[in-house]
Length: 152
Ligand code: HEM
Image (cartoon, rainbow, N blue to C red; front, side, top):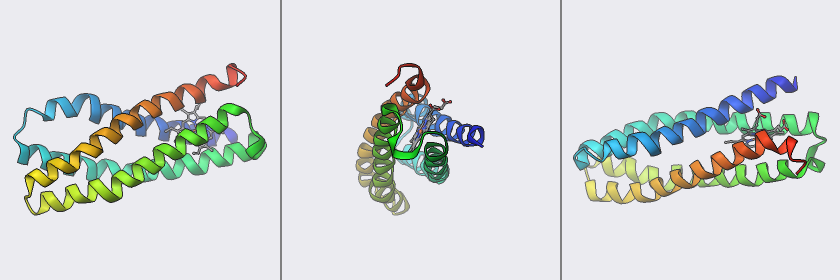
């Protein structure tokens, strides 16, 4: 059964972090070539679709992570790297939830009302959090994969 938890956990992590990488490193610089209304409408639609998936990835990561933690690692008395994973994981999830409920909602409202400078303002914290979560996502992946071999 643990194999199933691990497969679901890894797929959700790969898709979440891969999606952030693509948005941040590829689409962001290319979208800068567009005029503000087109660029902001594009991001509004991109995030609307991507974030619906991210809620699913977050649910799968938490459920499969704790199922694996309790069936294979004895719960909260697990090795140190799994405490690091939980800490970084919850920080990523909290940042994402804040991003979704505050600046992303502001972006949605501003784009719908065609208030472009407001929409551009809302993009700043979103961009910053995407950058932070990309870094944390790479770190948590290294911890998850290498942790068992480093006896942390
Ligand atoms: C917040 C609660 C979380 C818990 C309880 C948790 C728990 C676990 C457990 C038990 C493992 C297996 C470790 C092993 O096989 O030695 C694992 C591996 C892993 N986790 Fe998490 N995790 C959490 C969050 C996350 C998040 C948010 C991400 C990424 C976005 C993530 C990415 C990974 C990766 C990439 C692995 C390595 C999988 C592999 O070895 O193939 N985890 N996690």
